[in-house]
Length: 152
Image (tube, rainbow, N blue to C red; front, top):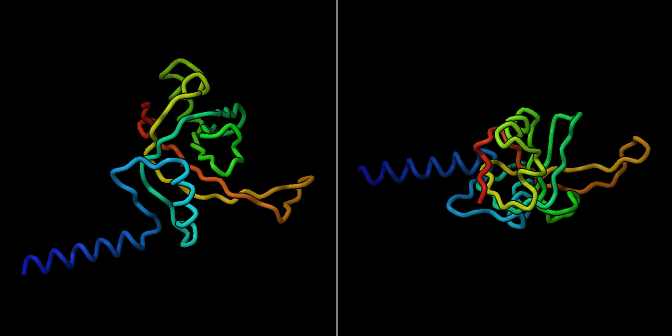
């Protein structure tokens, strides 16, 4: 009787997690390449990928007037192999205060692990302010808490 109840609970959990809108990748770091393939697959069902992403930061974009800064695993953020870490202004300010340095000084050429949710995002091209039919995809992980980032 107990074994049968446990089996039912496990099946129910699998069904809930399987249809909850995201994939969970546990017990292994996810590389940028894996994240890109996984988010592309997840996007087909409008899902995301939750896990721990391991990457080396090769480019940092600090938006002084904007509300977001970016850490990139590739030199060119448009590179299809790139994974972008989105850092809202309040998190950026917390990081720069904590380390008393710019994001570039803190992260450039550093290896990090980021715990979070990756999502494939469609980026449209514009010409003279008008959206064209051209687009490409980027993979983003948005930071909500400084503790999501670990230096390795």
